[in-house]
Image (cartoon, rainbow, N blue to C red; front, side, top):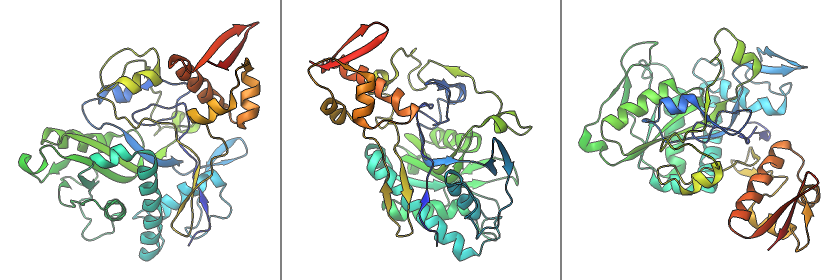
Length: 348
């Protein structure tokens, strides 16, 4: 169907709860205001809602559903997500084929990077449409396919929409049916979470123990989207934990110790969706603790030496390397000293 579609991965820094991209590691104010709903969002990659880079600007690209050859690699997943939507002109079977491959990718990510969340999930639900019996609802098919990939039950009648064109939903399950269950809401895209947050809140009120959200794309906030008439506006930032309300000084250490936060808050890697329904890691740099310890020596190492040894090229990976080094120092695995405005590291 499609020949190796690369995914623009969720990269540091971002809000640990909703994965919105931020200029630096903070908690977005949107998550603080809805701390009583979902626990976290798991997206496969970034989604650009109809905006495609041409030079230094973003323009709306009216691209035929069958032609993604002229779309830059980082935006191809976005075009394919659009192709699978109910309003797309793509044939119904093509939409279903696209959704199956993307759900295979999301299932792979949950199994590889979020196994603890996956163990918790009891039920999958979708974001309903009021007329989905008459028209194709891509959200229903995403949830159905992901449930099949994960071998989890999909409860298609748990949530229904009451009013056309408005996010007003009903929960058609008793407290007895939902009590104690961990539920994942499945959809194609997560932007600011108004609709899914509403559903999550109602599920919690009806007795669900916790709610997670699984999506193919997390809308990436760009300058054009931020400033557009329909944009989401400026995102307030905070150092407060959205799970326990504590002011955070060290983000990585806090999320390791916070007993209310999901224990799968991690930094994502590069990966690709392929036509063979497999996901291939395309990680150019390995920044796990073992790799960093292996690169260090008993002598003092500059950060430049480590960057070269580990093959770090991206500025986000450089920031992440510093976070990992400080975490190893707190665990008394390595030592640190400042010398002439340069930081040095060595094995203990």
